[in-house]
Length: 116
Length: 113
Figure 1 (tube, rainbow over the protein chains, first blue to last red):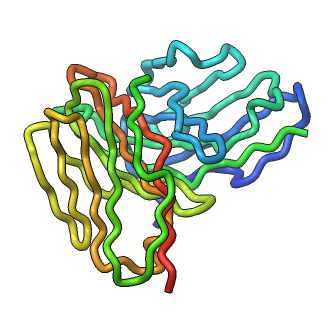
Figure 2 (cartoon, one colour):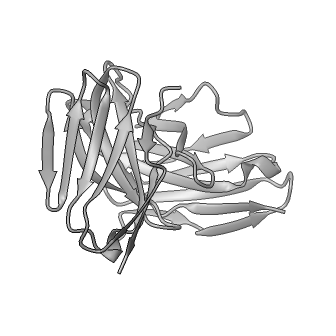
């Protein structure tokens, strides 16, 4: 049973045309993360939500925004995609409780974004 | 960089052999986690080892942690073709309250039938 679902699996957009990637989860986890992963590189954390609290990484470009309308859904918006934004975008969740950082993260299968 | 570094970058072995991957990191950690990623898929959590643990087992997986050397190793015993994937270590910094993980670049493991 899929627990973290990302749609679409593949997305093609044009240079400069806004694009939205979506993530949903059935785990009822209160933390959701967005990562960017380029070929043969480490996943790079863009930002995450702890419930409704948004935490942006210092080096995440302003071009990247996120929304979390409820516990189950989280969106990644790229306002003006450039060629350098072509990558796999991974959504992950975890449950925050005692020892917040001792929880594993559960990943979706990602959305591969191509820029024309 | 706070990222871990895996070694080797690529490893190619025959089915039945053992595979050992190493990870080095730079900061004081709360825990270290290993993940697997099949081609074109998301990451799957394999095992978490806390900073006060030295060794942990899960099925054919054995993870060791040496905090004095800031290093960890992942051993896969009796490897199978289905173990072919990229393996990443990820560290959670001591004192971090945000659950942030820092991933290494990964080791690409190929297991030949």
